[in-house]
Image 1 (cartoon, rainbow, N blue to C red):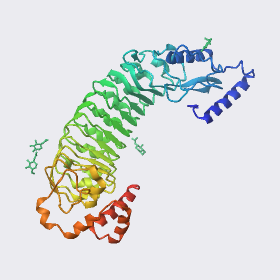
Image 2 (spheres, protein in one colour):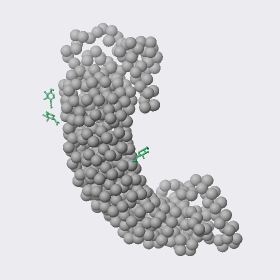
Image 3 (cartoon, rainbow, N blue to C red):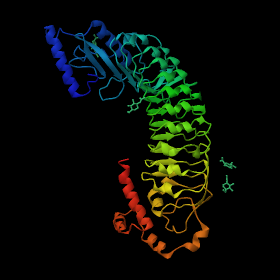
Image 4 (cartoon, protein in one colour):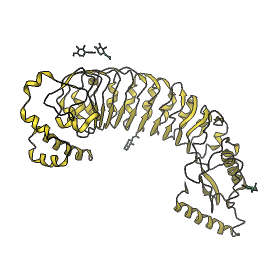
Length: 472
Ligand SMILES: *[C@@H]1O[C@H](CO)[C@@H](O)[C@H](O)[C@H]1NC(C)=O
Ligand SMILES: *[C@@H]1O[C@H](CO)[C@@H](O)[C@H](O)[C@H]1NC(C)=O
Ligand SMILES: *[C@@H]1O[C@H](CO)[C@@H](O)[C@H](O)[C@H]1NC(C)=O
Ligand SMILES: *[C@@H]1O[C@H](CO)[C@@H](O)[C@H](O)[C@H]1NC(C)=O
């Protein structure tokens, strides 16, 4: 009975209530199977959040049974109701809505079976009613609290209480999009049962504490959109269960620690928009489960050749835009068969492009603009029509496309035609383009009979590719 939002749970609550009421053998009006202290603590705590006008009088005097308070869940321990969850904020039409000058009353910490506490869109006024999270008493909830969440509370200011470090049963700590600031308390690293640690979208400063590397059960770790600085601690290699690591949009610097290769189950690594440097470290190759690798907008530098990309065969999104890459684009990238997005724009990449890139079966966007690539684009003509502006090759002054591509709809945007090719133009190429609306089904069906033709053959590959994509 974690939540009684569903009818099923309400019915179940009523059923339990009847059982409990019957076992007491009293008339319903007299039976309140809840300790007086528990009930008073609940009413006072809720009053603190929603305002003193609220006294529960509109309800049957039993917050857990017949007419439970919206956002409050209970469970039975030793024949008595106890509060297990309080969720405050406008989640549903009849949710408990926060008062403008809400307060944390100390009675909140007397709820001895409280497992879940969450505040959504409650502390909304950083100027008129800035509120800090209370510093004391959290240890009283250490034996029960499993999930603590403050979401979208711009008026919630100040530091994270060090008392959070005593909540040893916590599995989820989510402090997202609030007005919190200061350094992250190192003793959060004591919360070894944490599976989710999300501290994104605040004003946190300082370094990522070394101690966070002890959170070996962590699955989701998100410190994005803060002002964290310093280097990534090598201890992050201890987060061996991790699935998602998002440290994007901070001021982090230095090299990626080689220990990062220990994160064998990591599917997302997002470090975009930091000040990371030191080249593309070979240890990235160890992240064999990676589906999304986003390192864009950093000072990383180095060359793409330093990594054997085929090792990262699960990659779906690879964004290495604007990180100061040099050298050529290795053909090993065209072995990433699941790739849907490849961003290499605004680097200093040179050399010729392998036509194999365009044969990636799932590719939906390819950005190579803002480099110094050279030579002739050798992709099949249908590729440009299919991709449109999602193929970016502009701002490569020495890149050109073969003049055989005449129609405006299929030339790659912002790329000039290759001059020396003019004499090679074959007449039949023109006629094909003249009737060519490459996207129409009729054309596609017709093309199946002409698979030896380069352009139509591409369509066949492409259609099969989409089919394969769904199964990769
Ligand atoms: C509870 O509030 C109602 C109005 O909302 C009021 O009429 C009633 O007297 C209050 N009861 C107590 C016990 O304060
Ligand atoms: C990684 O994932 C696999 C499969 O889901 C799981 O069996 C394994 O325990 C995970 N490894 C760690 C260190 O969590
Ligand atoms: C690209 O590399 C060349 C040659 O090494 C250098 O002159 C140029 O400044 C670099 N451009 C950028 C944007 O880094
Ligand atoms: C781009 O490459 C060409 C030839 O490869 C070279 O001459 C030119 O200096 C390069 N431009 C930049 C900005 O690096």
